[in-house]
Length: 492
Image (cartoon, rainbow, N blue to C red; front, side, top):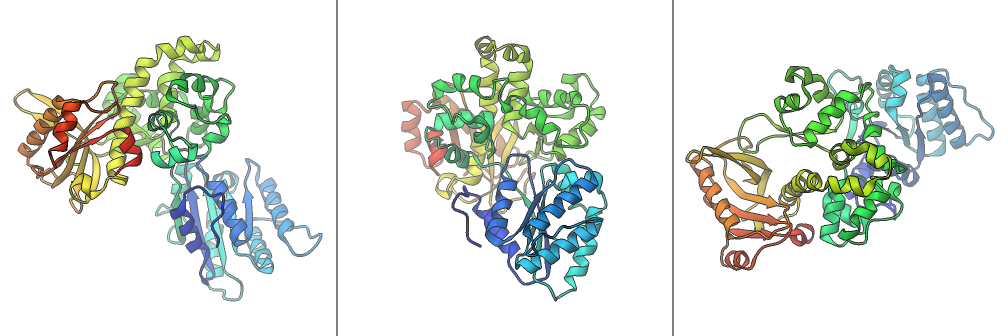
């Protein structure tokens, strides 16, 4: 199956689809899911185009309308001129699809927006199970490959649960994720690391957003405010209400107000159920359901402490959701009234401290995990995250932004060998010798807690670079690495 010329990146995913479509076994079922606008449908349409088959996208129809839509797709593919399909149920639909694909010498059937079908036909997964078992034992037809696709992550993941009829019958379980920060920069065709960083802090790596923006990225960081006014903060732009649109994807979310309250609290830095409850005036026990819904729907991520067994830290998964919660919604009437300059000026401190700062820390961890060479980290690394360390003398607890364990070490083990510790600062000032001395102090405290970290590399990340004294000192030491935005985006 030839790779399409217009496919950007996604090499791993394409290779997995090639492997899935191939082979001679009678039937395979695959599941492709992920947040909306990640390129799932685009990828599957090209799979059908390259391998041959039938792609049908469900709408929010009733059962009979959905069956008629499938029937129309089958008729367009059928080699029999003028044929009309009348499908009584999903069993007949699947049998007819197999027959038509077999006649056409094709093998792929894509049911996109599968959760819409389950709304009116909850039996469909059981029907697929029985169909799979029948075809698996029938060696007369050509191989058949069925791909189920959807954006409601909780619904699609339920298909993989132990109680699902399809559990144990799926050969492909592909979660299509956003592009990482380097892929996103190339996708937007941004070469300036500072500009790439701030755009990613707002929009993340979602593949579909450039199509919604239409005007392309800003030409320079100084043009970001004007660009945001035309796009994300423009009430006429689809991106202006994207967070509410994404929430509607999950069928469990009816009243959005309590979920927005949780998202706002987490965006503002509340990272535990107790802190979130305190921010929105609810007991943490009452938050169990909304936190579970937002997590399984892909809006929240729970980050474990890489060294200690303690409650995970909760953060927002999608940068655009975070941006709207912190910038747009608190000033909604101003943006709706096009009082953009006034609203944006009032949001500057929040944008710098609560969006750019945490986002820079996150990208620094991603750099260590995805791009740093063993020359930079001193050795191959395993788990990457953050941790806390106590200072008994000052009675303070310090947070380490970047911690990487040595490859093969077990996470949440206080005695694990630590390969890297680092701190990240997104401020406008350059980092100094004082920052290195602080990191050395934290390494000693970490060793006092039992960590094997005497040889750990010290990584200082600075969005605005480093002063001359720090650069001169680092050049003489083998255990210190300085990483600015240019190295973050281009180096290893």
